Length: 311
Image 1 (tube, one colour):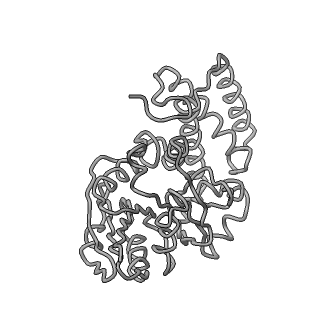
Image 2: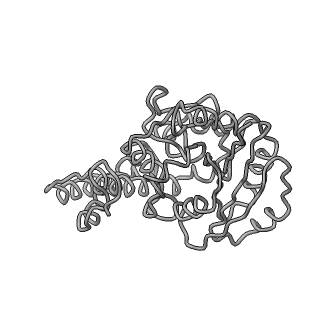
């Protein structure tokens, strides 16, 4: 029997209380006979009791390893985890999810059977969070909370970090996540760009939305302040992709920034930013996007157009 090796990576920072049930759910997951599975928890500079949670956790089905990455940023943590992996399959999830019992085998099998090179798994929400996200303005931005419902089941264009897997061979062409993107940096899109890169390199992504993790996101993320901050981060992250990956050139960037500023200023004057409506969120995103475009356009591009990093 051929031994199968899988490395699971969870990146965490100051979320000890949500991490504990996540680890417990992985501890209940089934492991096929002959498989060797390791779980790497990357602590990205936690100052809460994350270390105690890890020290107290006993896993009987997988080998638990702790990795410490002091440099802030989710992409730095992801890359630190990758460097420590030994598995043929690399499987990512987040520190606030619950995984189904068959998660490890189901996410790995399509890659091991050579149906695909990478798998975009599903993300669902418990009932109370799903109800909250079904209401405006969240219903228009569910993707910001790791929802996979907007991805094509036939040809997914990206993976979501809460539930994604890929074969180790991908790292030969796409060795790491972009450290300027993701939480702790511009805010979003580190797994989106990684997905774009692997597709550009000729690898395949297969959807497996029926194998879904349950995302227990912190409801404070739905507050007005946090939602507007997420809008700004999304705008800045979009601008990075716009310049460095898509290679857009426009002499009208400054004029578009001024227009976005005027729209934003009018909404503020009219009192429409007090309520977190879809127009207010879009105005916040647009303003952050064009402002960041003004910053990024002064920089040399980091990637070939729709391609891999410049040497």
